[in-house]
Amino acid sequence: MLALLALLTFFVSRGVPAEPCSLHRFAELPVTMAGMSPTVHAKINGDDSLFIADSGAFFSVLTPAGAEQLHLSLQDSPVKTSGVGGNSRTWMTTVKTFTIFNTDFPKVVFLVAGNDFGYGIVGVLGQNVFRL
Image (cartoon, rainbow, N blue to C red; front, side, top):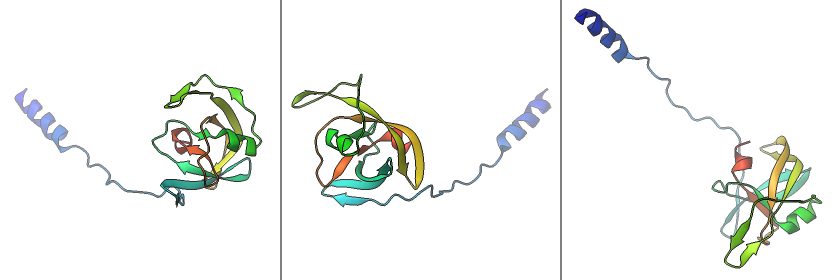
């Protein structure tokens, strides 16, 4: 019995060597600074648009002016937003085709809220886009 235990211990302790880690480039996303904001280009329904890239944002957001500029329809949102100035109305919109990394993604949802960012920025890209 002791010999069997020693033999099992030998095989278990040897293990299988793991594959070495490697880094592969998925896609390139050129970033340009607009003031202190990292901005990237993407397309909404074929229209080139400028966004702030925010990998820490849980969801992507369009400004109301950006949604209007892109002729997007708005629906009421269950998400409530508030800040220093109080509560703010929030809508949702579903973009027919969102293009980033030279790849088209159908039916991407954005929250619509907030104020103008300046520099021609129409919104913020968050995790629901970066995890596509």
